[in-house]
Image (cartoon, rainbow, N blue to C red; front, side, top):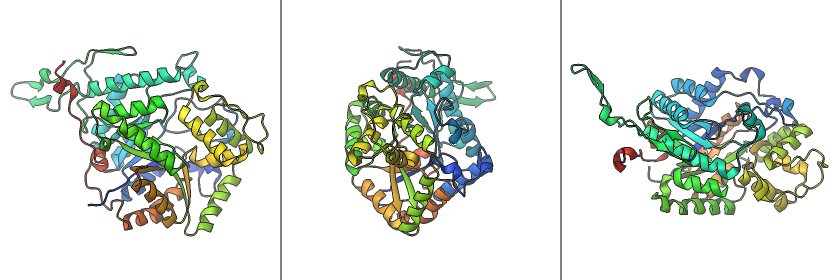
Length: 446
């Protein structure tokens, strides 16, 4: 396979990424929290040769939002669901979102090592920080951490997890029955980490993952997020509206990697894409129109308020956005705030028009059209250093995923930029990433 290949993730957010997906005619109540249905979607993605299934997660129900009753908020905890999917798939990568704000490194490292072993080397960790008072209150805290503190904690958290994965050398288990020696203790090490946020002795109580480390994914595009990604991430899930913005981000993050001793090819940048596919452009537009008609106004305003971190409920929906705070005052997702604000200003959108624009893609790129039109746009970004691949966000399940698999994937394959068969069995092999060396052995500071 000589031509450069793009990477694809199937972003599972059921019943769909559109905020009103649960009201769409072809989505069904019986698919909610239905493992058999999710298994079918994962197998469809695997048959289409996607690199990975991607699961988002949060640590609150969004109960305090203005439109809680109007949005789908019940979803599986990622480790549980991905462990189930590991047993019924054989090739596709399994990406779970886990927060560094309200977890501990030992538990997370152990769970991901377990998932990597159970899946034969297909696990990946989407490293996120968590914001919001509701989330903080769920973990016995009266207030949330500041943005910079969340990222500082995340950086140390990932460092500790990697040390824990390295606490067992690859050949530590000797299983010598004759000499009654199960493990070579000289090849299992305490990590003795002492930092600002964590004090962890180790070792882990499971062996080093099949992939060395699960693939490290990050979703974040703030200044702190870009620096963390340049240092630790192997895949970035990001959001951009224009080719120029995506190219600037691509160059920025990859140019930061050298100071951490990393090559740009060690990081795959995969923006989110929300595709509405039709056999004709009219069919695609009709699907979009139907989804927009199903958005309750209160839900649209609530979703936009969440994205901006500003309560918009008192403003006319057919009027402009009010004056927004400076980004320095935002303690939520800074990059998403800026992206949505820029979109509104660039296109002079009203509150209603803006919430319609983010109702499905949540600030990610929305592409509407025929398979050829969809691929034209994906290929443009891929071949012009704006993306190494894409995380596909179907509007609805099962139809949105089915449309992409049956209509778009064959066009990508026809153009020679997406695989027809897997060439390896681990997620690292799918993505063209090397298995990391054991840092505790190579640095000899044990």
